[in-house]
Image 1: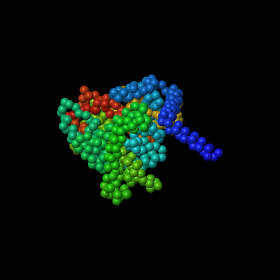
Image 2: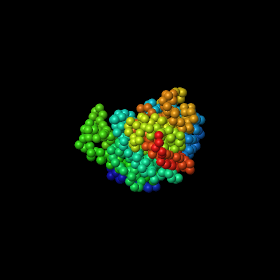
Image 3: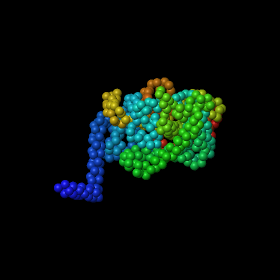
Image 4: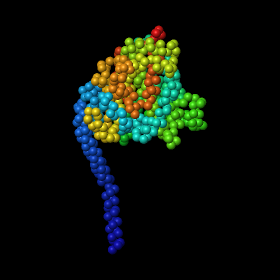
Amino acid sequence: NLQQTAMELFEIIRNNSIIYFDPRRLYHLIAVFSLVTVAFKLSKLFINRKQALKILESFPGPPAHWLYGHVHEKFPQDGDDLDKTAKWADRYPYAFPLWFGPFVPFLNINHPEYAKTILSTTEPKDDILYRFLIPWIGEGLLVTDKQKWFRHRRLLTPGFHYDVLKQYVKLVADSTKIMLDKWEKYTGKEESFEVFQHASLMTLDSIMKSAFSYTSNCQTESGTNMYIKAVYEMCNIINLRFRFFPYHSEILFYISNLGYRFRKACKVAHQHTDEVIKQRKEALKDEKELDKIHKKRNLDFLDILLCARDEENKGLSDEDIRAEVDTFMFEGHDTTASGISWILYSLASNPEHQKKCREEVLVALEGKDTVDWDDLSKIPYTTMCIKESLRLYPPVPGISRKLTKPMTFFDGRTVPEGFILGISIYSIHRNSSVWENPEVFDPLRFLPENCAKRHPYAFVPFSAGPRNCIGQNFAMNEMKVAVALTLKRFELAVDPNKTPKKIPKLVLRSLNGIHLKIKHASRKT
């Protein structure tokens, strides 16, 4: 009957519920599910690996370890990483594969003609290394792509106009003089001092004053600047995460101590940025048009960012503004600090070129203790030395892109959609088929007649093509000012006991620092 049937049904449900909630069975189901998930993901990875090996058959390269790939050889972080890659580039012309662990291959490009093929497009940055940057710098111009990138590039371009950059020169000179005043205590001493930390504070001070009209006093305040410390910490962590394959997993990285340290450093950097934006918004709350602001004072990058409007009269969101400020703050100070440090080291290593630069600077400045906009065009030999140092020591040693469509190179070899191409700027700049005696410091390579004969993608310290560095003129001007004022005041010498060991950590650094000795320079021309 109906009652008996209902009782039987209830008994079945109760028994099934007991079975379902039996902890041992539940753990068993979880274990089985986990094993199936892992097996599925591993099988997918091995299928992708097999496909990648097939694609890379036409690109011979150095043998890779079955588990580590080339990480244990290329990225031991011992100071020889980049030179090893450059040697491989001589052995495997144009491009060769590099494996990061067993499942992540890059095609490493080391020739200008191959670089031209990819850099002349607007293909997006890769979704591995650059993905690790997003929690810090957001989806700004460096990492965004497609229509968002086009829109942001168009809105930000006025911030790097000649008229805007011109007013920055005096501010950069003021920041440089603060740094050089601090160096007075090192003059005439046998012991060398580390340059990069000073250059990093100076470039941060410069960008805060010029691009954001913000006085930070970061060069003179006691103790270590928290923002600089946070940037250094995040660069280190991103570098470690890239090299350690398990940390490519968001979950594993998040629960690790490294992930905790990264979030803590991000918070410091974001607080710094938020304070800069907050102060400017307060100052601009009654002024929304650039013309009105310009009548009161010179415009800076942040003014243009906050007031930028597209053809539909839409501006950037608060999230976009912070992303662009974070991006420019990082790219505008850390990369330039690297460039300045290695330029000073190059000139210290080549005293005959240093002497010529100093003579040129003294004539150009005509006794002034500062640098003006018009002076920048009066130091061509110094500019060539700066470029030669950027060739040997590019601040960003490599970049990478992910293909959204198949790409065929000039020699007929092809890579498919979805593949990652790494452009080794360091190797291109030392390619012996492009540069004669590539290890020699020779600024005459950059005489106009020599540049005209060279491949247009042979010298790419700021990348090239439509996705080149939007702030390259700002960076070059800052380096010229810093080098000119340094040479005017000091004579530089290397410390033979502390030769720098080059390591790529987002920007080119030295494992043991960049140490110089200084003494007051003669003022005679």
